[in-house]
Length: 288
Ligand SMILES: [Zn+2]
Image (cartoon, rainbow, N blue to C red; front, top):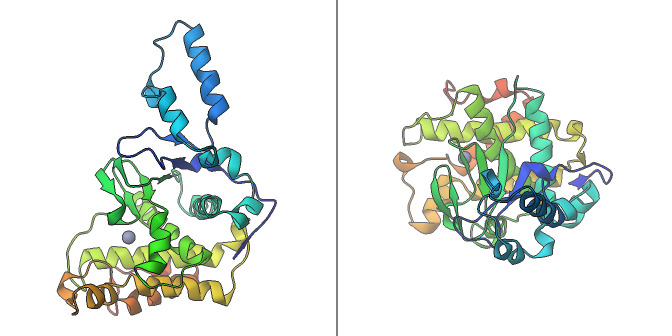
């Protein structure tokens, strides 16, 4: 999976809260760099002070100084060449590509912010810690991810990992955002044929649909068979049956929430081969 070196990245789609702990202030990666923040503060002081409201209201010098310079995404991640070099820039490029795709599919598409965090952070769906893994919060329409999870895919879940495995994770979460916009999120029900599994398998399928069109978005040069294999490997690694057998020593389909390894791979492939959201009707599928 190679990114087009000249493709411009839009870091405004990602907020970087790494190293800030719970309740930290999100500094928009592409919005205001450190220099921009300083300028903003000076202007605020000149204009009479007390004018700090909105997202910058909690800002103080200590918060800014805690963020290592390398975490200012806007400076670090400018082009696809950066995405080919650095993991966080790669995720920015994934997010850009996935949203470019969906904005061409869903009328009046509303972009969803991805939030990088480490340890724990506040979300519209309550406090979140690294342990819960990447997730989409419909209340604030943000995707939350501790990038450490991408290493855990390999170290904890046994996946081979790799850039396309990472892209699959992000594309799955944006699949939930697409479901949210299309009114298909929020169907509950546990078990192998319940609403939760159907929702998750559709998100896997949507990830495949994006993969089908990934090169067309302009951010990615090519996807090879090895890339797709990475994605399928990651999908299998987070299958309910695989996780249950490894953590509990047994498989209980009645408590499944995401579907089996085989199902997650198959629905990703359905989307990848077909290339249309219509290939992802997990809600009425008889052969789930
Ligand atoms: Zn999901």
